[in-house]
Structure formats: structure tokens, C-alpha cells
Amino acid sequence: MNANIRAVRVAAEAPAAAPASMRTGEEYLRSLRDGRAVFVDGERVADVTTHPAFAAAARSAAKLFDIAADPANAERMTFTSPSSGKPVLRAYQIPRTHADLRARRLASEMWSEASFGMMGRTPDHVSSFFCGFAAVPEVFAAGGAEYGERVVSFHEKLRENHLWATYAIVPPQIDRSKPAHRQSDPELYAGVVKETDGGIIVSGAQQLATAGLYSDYLYLSCIHPLQPGDENYAIGVAIPMNAPGLKLYPRRPFALQASNVFDHPLSSRFDESDCFVVLDKVFVPWEEVFIYRNLEVCRDQWWKTPSHLYGNLQAQARYATKLRFLIGLAAKMNETTGNAALPPVMGQMGELAALISIVETMLEAQETVATVDANGVLWPSRQALYAVMALQSEINPRMIEIVRELTGAAMISLPSSQKDLDSPLTAPDIERYMASGTGSARDRIKLMRLAWDFIGSEFGNRHQQYEKFYGGASFIVKQNMFRNYDMKRAKALVDGALDIA
Ligand SMILES: Cc1cc2nc3c(=O)[nH]c(=O)nc-3n(C[C@H](O)[C@H](O)[C@H](O)COP(=O)(O)OP(=O)(O)OC[C@H]3O[C@@H](n4cnc5c(N)ncnc54)[C@H](O)[C@@H]3O)c2cc1C
View 1: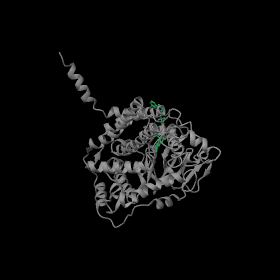
View 2: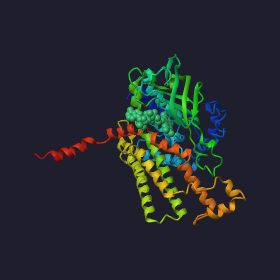
View 3: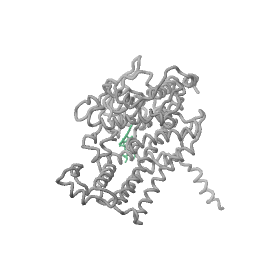
View 4: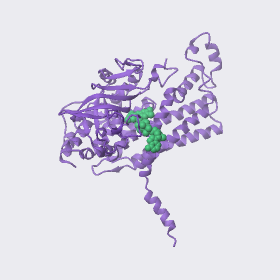
């Protein structure tokens, strides 16, 4: 290990004076009023915490900080900072034992349950990438010792200040038939356009910072393959969300169409938003430049550190929560319609349970088959992670299909809105004909609305796209699986069978 990096690590483990108390939801919300440039319907959003498109999801995000700050959750959500000795978010713990890895997952589960698995890029996602980067700073130091030191310091900065980073690491789909430097304008894809004594200037666009408008920092880098000539785009930099020149263009916010929580129970509260990022001559000081014009380091950060494994383990923990929610929803719908005890329905629920169990048990396999590297850091099992990621794009639509099949018109044969339950003109019919054998019309409609928001609404459909693409296009995920399967052992078996002469 490089001597300077070792020094940074030792310093990080010595007690530091700066006390760090946990960040509350209220403090988090206040920090979002920082002048960040977010644009919706052609206008700049003055305050994301009060704008109708974003306010409710901002409160859902704030709740995550309150959960972590609650002394009752201290053991689950925090660990002792190696530098300050104070509690900090578990999401920033670099796992050195199997118990650490499991503890990280349990913390992620608690956060994911707060949104029923609907918010994917909570603070524990990109924090996991930074844990992976800081665990193997040698990869960054290949570009110069200072880059390794900076990535360790930045991980510490995020950790000590309970910060939330999101990322944009995919080039925009402008013309994928040409590399970054051969686009019609070399400043289309996000890259460095100028170097100064104090740092670098970055311009261009990058996709797709989910939860970007709710976070503190953007990690801008590239996971798509780059080629010689693309050096200006081979960077890894952290940018505060209110940096001059950084602009966020969220897709159409679902909360604007969600008139109330009863009719839109998920889209009104948990739309984490997906932001297209534009950088207009954004200055990044050298301290927050971790990769600079280096194709190898830009590639190796994902594959030669455990970053991709930690980040996607968090994603799978969140996904497992969402699937438990899905099967719970299906079970309650079957009970409501009186179909739960039908053998074919039990068979379909069994298939659903089997698919969900694969995801749940593969999470545990990532932990139990984890290996320890030369720095004493745990790497979750690649085979277990990529197996379930590779299957996800196939099994997720299948599971949605099963729920659709089980429900018939249940999610559709509902009154137009909550107002029909409240109006004396319509309430008598609704209450008489829309009740179920297990409860009132209000109970039944509430459940079916929840199911529709989950599966059929625009919010639900965005989720299906998310589950397909959040970890990259499925052809790439399957190639990762191929590379990480023990083909040698499999072929040796065949060789054994052929050895008959
Ligand atoms: C809801 C959502 C949230 C997201 N959140 C984030 C985020 O927080 N941060 C972030 O950085 N990114 C995020 N992404 C972006 C995500 O990482 C990308 O969508 C993903 O990497 C795929 O890249 P792409 O969209 O450019 O698709 P493409 O690479 O253009 O692929 C689209 C399709 O084209 C075909 N194709 C393309 N190239 C090839 C090839 N070489 N060989 C064969 N077939 C090919 C395949 O059918 C593929 O499925 C998000 C995406 C979605 C949909």
C-alpha cells in the first residue's frame, strides 16, 4: 500500500476532536434550501422542500435521517466513527467481518422499509460505492498517490457529516454509435474542459441521478466503456448539489398528478425522481477530483474495488423489501376477494414466494460467501450478486404478471376517487356494492388503490423500468455473471466424462 494512503488510514483511526451528532430530518430539509438549480415545467424550483412536485418525497427522505438519529435505532443504523468516536451512519462502514456486512444490510433493510422498497437511491446506495472506493484506494492511487488520499478523505467527509451522495455515471443517449470524443460537439458528454491551479472545469451532460435533487453531493463519473481519445470523460469527481453551473432536470414528477394520499398512496409520497444532469462550466476543486483523465482508473473503480458489490447489495436489500411488500399485497388482495384458499391461487402465490425467496436467500449468500482481501476488507460474493441481478430483469415482469393475473378487475372496478366515498350522492352505492367479505368498501378500495399505484400507475411503470435498468442493461449484467461463474470447474467435469479412452 502507498505510504501516504497508509498515513491517511492511520490518521482516520486516531480519535479526532470534532464531535458529530446525528443529522435530523429537520436539519436535512433545511440543508436542501441551498439554491440548487432544479427545473420543472420550464421553471426553476425555488425550494424543493415546499414545491408540490417534491415536498412529500423530501419529507419521506427526511424520515430516513430521523430513523437513523433515533437512539432506539442506534445499534442498527449507526457505528462508531473510527476518527471521531461518535456514532455515524452504518452505511459508511467498510466491512471487515461477516458481521459488519450483515449489519450494513440490516441497516439498509430498515431504511428500505420506510418507503416499502420504493426509494432506491437512499443515502446508503452511493455511500456503499464510496466505502468500496476507500477500501481499495490503491486503485485511485494508480493515477497518482494524491487521488487515493482524496478518495479516502472524501469518504470520511461524507461519513462524519452524515451526507447523502447520488451519482450520474452513464453518458446521455445522444449518439451511441460514436465514442464520447467523436460526438458532434466534444462538450456534449460530461467531461473536463479546462484545468486550473485550483481544480478543473467540467461541462456537458450525464444521466441519470435518481434522487439527485434530494442529495448533498453528485458523484460524476462514467461506467460505460470509454476508449483511447475519451480521456476528458474519464473522470471521477464529487460536486455539491448547489455548485454554480450544476443543473438538474427531473423527469415528470408523479406527485403533481397525485391529488391525495388515499388515491395515490405511493406516488404521492415516494417519488424519488430521476434527474438528467447538465453541467455548465462547473468548477471542481482538486480535493474532490478522484480520477483525472485516466481510462484505466475510471474502469477499475467499479471492478477492482468492492464498490459495485456493496452498492448493488444495498440495491438487492431494498429490492427484497419491495418484493415482500408485493407478496403481502397479493395475499391481502386474495383474502379480500375470497380467493385465498383456491388451490390454483395458492399455486400462483407459491411461485411468487419461490421467486422472492431466491432474491432473499441470495442476499444472505452474498454475505456468507464473502471473501476477505489483503487489506482485511470483505468483498460480497460476486457470483451470488450477479446471479440475482441477471435474473431480475426476467423475474420482475413475471412477478408483476402473477399479481395482475390474480386480481382480475379488482384494481380497476373502483370509483373514480375518494370523493365518491365522501359524497352523499354516491356513497350509498359505493358502500353497498364495493365492500368485500372481509371489510368495508373504504378498506377494499384503499387496498386496491395501493395495488394499482404499485403496479399500474405511471409511478408503478417507472418502477418496472428501474428494476430492469438500475444496475445497467441486462445484457451487461449477464456478461458480468458469465465472467464470474466458475466455468473451469464445470468444464473439468465434462473433461472427466470425456476421459474414457
Ligand atoms: C429509472 C432509472 C433510474 C436510474 N438511475 C440511475 C442513477 O441513479 N444513476 C445513474 O448513473 N444511472 C441511472 N440509471 C441509468 C442506468 O444506469 C442506465 O439506464 C443503464 O446503465 C443502461 O444504459 P442506457 O439507459 O444508456 O441504455 P443503453 O445502453 O442504451 O441500452 C438500452 C438497450 O439497447 C440495447 N443495447 C445497447 N447497447 C448494446 C450493445 N452493445 N449490445 C447489445 N445491445 C445493446 C439493449 O437492448 C439495451 O437494453 C437509471 C435508469 C433508469 C431507467
